[in-house]
Amino acid sequence: MIGSRALLLASTLMLSGCSLAPKTVLPAPPVPQSWPAGDAYLLQSEAGLPILSYKSVFTDPRLQSLTDQALANNRDLRVAYANVAAARAQVRVTRSGQFPELGISAGAGYSDNGGTGNGAGDFSLRGGVTAFELDLFGKLANATEADRNRALGTEAASRTVRLALIANLADAWATYGADRDLLKIAEDTAANARESVRLTKARLDGGVAPRTDLRQAEQILATAEDSIAQQRTALAQDENLIRLLVGGDVDRTLLPASLTEVTPVIVALPAGVSSEILLRRPDVIEAEYGLRAANADIGVARAQLFPSISLTGLLGFASNALSGLFDSGSFNWSAGGDATAPIFDAGGRRAGVAVSEAQRDAALAGYEGAIQTAFREVADALAVQGTISERVRAAAANTEAASDTATLTDARYKGGVDSFLSSLDAQRSLYSARRSEIGTQLLLVSTRIALFRALGGDSSAGTTTP
Picture 1 (tube, rainbow, N blue to C red):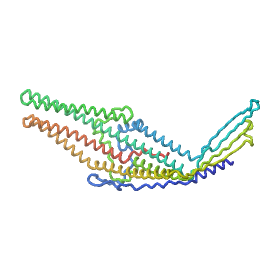
Picture 2: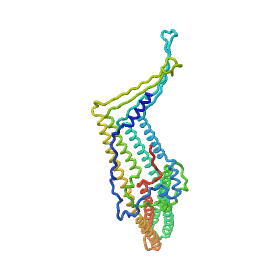
Picture 3: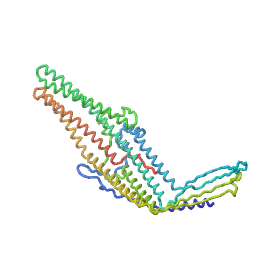
């Protein structure tokens, strides 16, 4: 009964302990309340942007299948999840210090003085509180709170890894489609160059064209063949990257045949949305939990300035005979407590408080910096999105004009009106224009993916409390 009262008293004192941690006050986001507006941004009228999953942004079933495979097998993501599990376990380790540690011990002994055979035995069974610190000033509670916030920050970091994995895979998938187009351009150019070499050699043999025309045609062919080799290498490297992100072999039927298959299935996101949406980004959430953990650490450091009180209590049985171990006269109990208070430590504990406060200030600046960085990334992506359609149209018009110029210049050369050098220049311009158009189209897709990443999409990555 007395032991039970002691435990009840200890539990009451523990629950009534105060916290010395300052209240966490998040600053107002240090960014404007809306995105930049102007000709480069094309501010739209949407009132808000929903939290989107990757399946609502990347709508191609092939890309979705690869993404599902990556989420199941990617090793970086497995490392991130393992870190989350370790952080959650650490919360339980720290929290266990807030509760009494109960133990039990049993013993038996025998002694015989002088070997007379008249020895005596003793038996004991004891249990109780072996160590328990009263958390009067919130040291243990704040330590648990700090670790809990760090665990939540680690989980947010795993969501950052997850979001980056999804975006990187979409980028690699789109790049593969673009490289397939660039390979086709190189192969078409090489085919035209072979025909040009054949015709120029025939004109040289007929005494119509100089040898320099043939050598220049051969240069165009060699350049195109080199581009073919480079693009085949790029495609192999694209597959290697996708295989790494997916975490296993890749079915080639899930890869796009060209960039024209990619562009319609990467959904463009609207620009007209409050900048407070950035508070949903996992890296911003991670910084916020880091700030909360630093705040709790201040409470731990402040509690070190005050006395520490520990309680112990034992109850049990002792007897000279095992048969009488549980007799009423064998019961005994004991209780005790220790109190320690700092007197002089050369300012070490107060310096610990100063350290934790400085770390809190650094965490606050990091939190604000994460928001500002996020704002800049989204604003940059919106700036590209606002002008990319004009660039795509200009690139297409340039390719059309270069193609027409190449056709006309070749006809004039064959008719003896223009030099072969003019025809070669027109072919080079067409090759460059076609490659530039593919690059611009890929930039359009990459910008949409970058905006998905910058806004912290993927609502399927939820948060649970450790």
